[in-house]
Image (cartoon, rainbow, N blue to C red; front, side, top):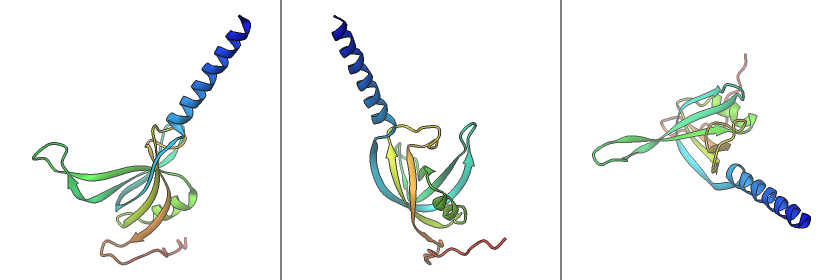
Length: 136
């Protein structure tokens, strides 16, 4: 009987670890989103993470007769991405992201985690991939 109890405990631990991995570390989707960078800020109570919002062109309508802008809320991973987005407020940005099923406090408040900036352009369309260095 002792052998069956050990096997059951081992099976339960494996299922719990697998479920935790699937919920918090499994990458559900990857993609690219583009739009105007509305805000980018560092926030959090215990874990300070970088959070942002991109407003995409066009409108979505969750209910008939209502209009709402498309927003992409995201968290950021990587200091180089933070540096680029800090200087891109109000500009058109293209971001590469990963979507997880659930957020983790130290990873950010969103299921979407941006890990690369593909392009940054002025609203008029002029590409500005080489951002000027802050000379303070």
